[in-house]
Every structure is written in structure tokens, then in C-alpha cells.
Length: 128
Image 1 (tube, rainbow, N blue to C red):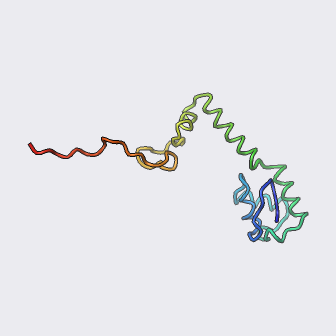
Image 2 (cartoon, one colour; image 1 turned 30 degrees about the vertical axis):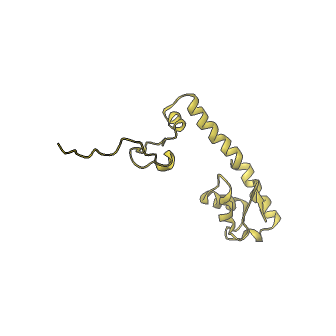
Image 3 (cartoon, rainbow, N blue to C red; image 1 turned 90 degrees about the vertical axis):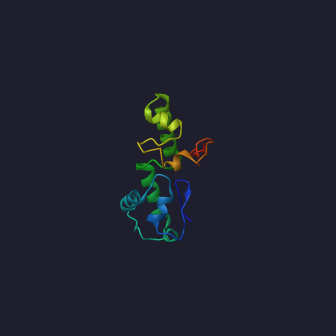
């Protein structure tokens, strides 16, 4: 059971996939790390020896920002945008999309569940 950057990696997966369980490491970065650490990407996590795990850990800690530190940096950036009252900061503050997407329809992921407001149904024509 390999533990890298405070994350327990799954044993049955290939190491390039297992590294993507660490926040801040994707597929491309995973391959780059393994290439620099001289570890075969298709090796299962359970088959790694301690030296290979140490090389991977050293590469990540020396050259990449991951997990809690990366989350602190991102939240700090968002807080800075809110503090200077930029347009993106205002959009973050009111939970709307920040990158120009439309909000008249869609944007459900960011806005949450649909809330029906009374009085928005179409009026039925009354007989006179």
C-alpha cells in the first residue's frame, strides 16, 4: 500500500492512474513524474518497491504543488479576486459561472436546484 503526499494510492491500478488520485496531478503530469523518476508507468502500485516510491515522492515534493497547499493557493486566489471586487470575484461570491457562460438557461451545476417562483405561469385567456 503506497502512500504519497498524504494520499493512499489504490493497489490494483497502474501507477500512472493511481497518481491521478492525488489532487493536482492529472494524466499528463503523472506520466511526466514517472518519466523523471524512471519508473515504468504500467507497473501496478502493489509491485512498486520502496526506492521507486521514494523517487516518485521526491519528484512530486520538489517540483509540484499538490493536495492541501494547492487548495490553499486556489482559495487564496479566489479570495483576492473577491477582495478587489473584480467581476470574476463578484461572480464567485454569488455562485454564478465566472467564465462567460450563459445563465438564462443551463448553469445548473453552479446555480443549484431549480426553484420555482409563484406567478410565472402563463395566464389563461378568460372568457368575456
